[in-house]
Image 1: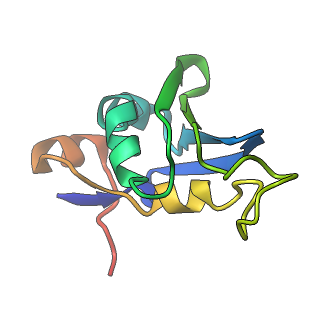
Image 2: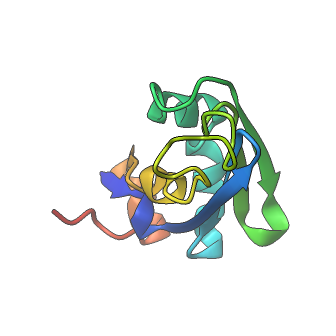
Image 3: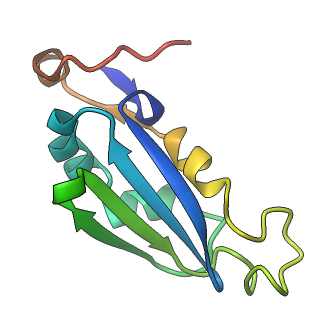
Length: 118
């Protein structure tokens, strides 16, 4: 089953110099293990291929049912010197939420995941 990340999580992003910071939080606590399994640093790095020049670091915050990603080389030098339209990295959260996950039907049913629209 195709599940849109935006239907099972919310996110917030910002800047730390040349690094964008993206937090992803499960909308339902029971969905956090799925997020932890599916949103690897490698997968997030592939999702942002061509947009960032450095590695992706992932930090788990299980008590918050959240993951935090640092996207190195995302801001063309940082907010004060970057000529990018989004020099503070505010749209990286929206861009990550566009990811679509392919979850086995039986698991999606057990977790009561919403079906992707559109």
